[in-house]
Image (cartoon, rainbow, N blue to C red; front, side):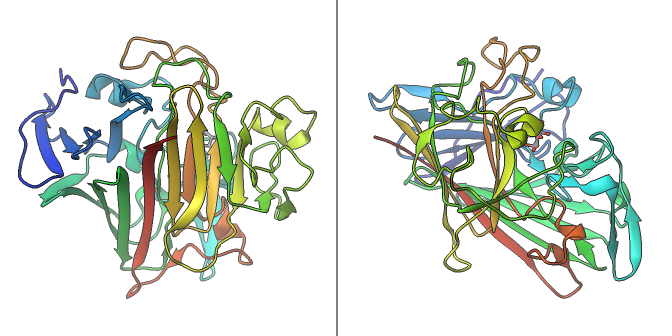
Length: 359
Ligand code: GLA
């Protein structure tokens, strides 16, 4: 069994360690910086399994939900995608189909009548190739033409690095040999009080967005871009997540809470602030910065205490949240929204940063 503990170090401030699991091809890579911040990532799903960061008093805790063993990721009951890269198309596509260049593509409907996170065997469930670089680790995966119903041989990579400013930088690149759609993101669940803590509703959240995309009961966007003003979805001023959570609101009812896509107020295509999360007791802060146009805030509504995490604690309802940088859900069926189409000769190129701090 792979016990997710760190091992050998290499050179420079930011160090990369490698541990080998019983599944020879599956390894754990550990990034460390000069501030005692430690990040563990496995090439199974290019999955962040642990993020250890200090609080205001310097106490280190693991703020990422996840499991102790690789087997648990492989055998997980209902696959909450803990820490993995999801795709080929992260989030939902209505009715599992889209038309591209007059060709209709049919995908698995693995979420009611819709498609979610790349289908039955998405990128979170495959073994990626790994390359240890000077102070980062690069994971690569070749998704075959027709895999999960998607067109094109897609050569994808994600490079994780950890800076001495406590930033986990995730840089995604891809090319294709046929027109296709691509929308990959990292699906880490955070609890800044430490994984295993009971709730995230006491966390304070800011989302840099004036509009969100309301959904139907299947969590598929209706096509409207709605103003957040005067709604529970207004996080332009930081507020406690639980403050408006029980408001009588159809969108909160459909989401079973917050599980929606915000359209970011962007200046240009640089790496810009999308969201900021703060946990008052520990003083821990997480800033999410990205080149992506939108963000899914998922409040852990499907966690129900059945899954037991790495510290042996059950993951209760809303005990972790995700801030998934992305293009909007169902964009392949929304030509009026920013496109997720990638064509031969083009390069898919996005960056997202998780920056940790205290206040
Ligand atoms: C995303 C979706 C949620 C849920 C989780 C995984 O965040 O928006 O509805 O499916 O993935 O459980």
